[in-house]
Amino acid sequence: MPARPRPHELLDGTARIAFGLWIGAVAGVAFVAAPLVFGAVPEHIATKDSAARVIGPAFARVDIFGLVACALTGIALLLRREDGAARWRLLLIAVVAICAAVDAFFLAPKITAREEPLRIYHGLATTAWMLILLFGALLLAVGLLPRPSEASRDPS
Image (tube, rainbow, N blue to C red; front, side):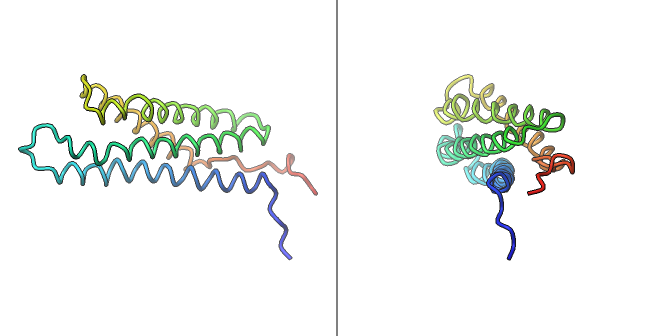
């Protein structure tokens, strides 16, 4: 009979899945959905308000999901009580969480409402999502959660 996973192993697995899904959703919305929606609006329409109303809420929803994924991942790292590798991971998770929060609660609502200076808000939101993608992909590439060392494994 296989051993039952420990609670921290379930949290680790959930955090890995949630974080990976979030980074995939960011890439999907940024590089597939938004270009398709804005590309479908004829160029002669000056404001593209309808496209912004369609895709705008998706950005905020993806950001909210990201905040949950970052919280799960941060909790999983903190519960490990590890030093070294976990610290820089926590720092990167904090950076992407801040980017997601600023976009979800400040930038996305202003962009969806088409507030001026729209170009600046859009540029900041694009930068936030590029940082999320860069640091998120880095975290996924090196291992979101460090593997427990042999010395710190619980023999029970």
